[in-house]
Length: 183
Image 1 (tube, rainbow, N blue to C red):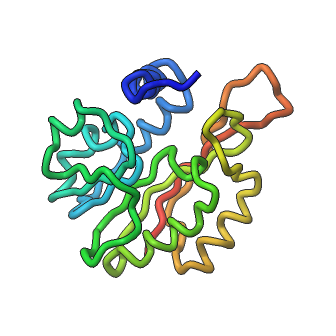
Image 2 (image 1 turned 135 degrees about the vertical axis):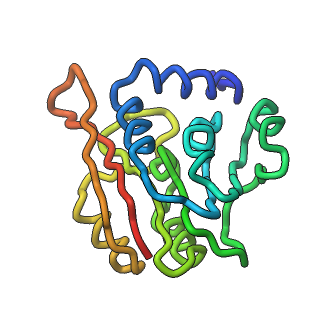
């Protein structure tokens, strides 16, 4: 059955508390020590990442095609309810956490990120491998493929952390990789 935006947001919030891999992704965000400047969040869900990082931001925009009324009320001037396809404004940082696997062509969006960043800007992204979920459209099966594609775009990896999933099926070898990419 189709689930509502509120139901989906609740699932995402609960997953941060109950799923070890989501907790570890949030922990990686909390470890960021540098100022994020003018940031862009793409695919914000319930806004967890924004709330965690708000003290490290000068200002931000957030793009999502479906957002709850709750997050729009908290950040009415920052939320843009549409697909991010680039902008004339340049960002110091761009975030796509637990988003890329929901796209048919995630490298197209990563290229847009590159073009939307200031010189030496960073993109913080996660990839998902072998995580069967109803709304996942892309499987980042090979780490070297991702690395080759982002290098071709122009990014360099300045940090990466593999976050393995706990699974009853050991053959699945599901994981997320948390990346910090620099222009």
